[in-house]
Length: 205
Image (cartoon, rainbow, N blue to C red):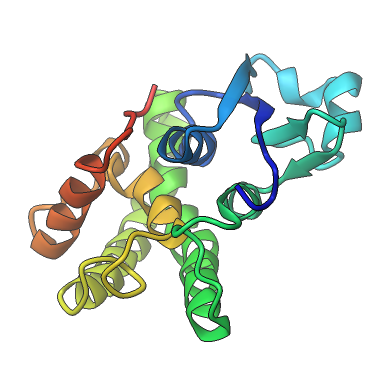
């Protein structure tokens, strides 16, 4: 690869969609990596040692062989994808990738990922049920935006897989765990299958 990444250490939770982005990217690009499991419910990200790696105390974090650290999932996958077909070099196409990644962080994850966390990680406790319900409309809107785009193109940025697709695949393919049915989104469903059919694809977990 042009950026010279040969091996990385990944700090993450294998059930987390944001961390899964890194696992999937490494698999698709054949990047050797070591996984350090972090239990967020047990407070692994809140200890002093991890805080020195990421002062924001969130996963994922990658550590390069020379000790450099990088956090925020979409920044990580774009770094790993440098020099590959998964990250366009043309300025407008690159901006379109980033457009979808910002959409994922601001219009998709706050609804679908948070609803999944409340349901899957916390077991939908009584004091979070109202919050869980408030996430449903926003999640459905995000899926509708994706459905509209994927009715026009095979992938989110044209007809080639990019890191934009990896970003949004992570939580979309487990949207049912947040209470979202994909039955009304056939183009999204077909897109998920196209990603699953990629060589070297690995599932969540």
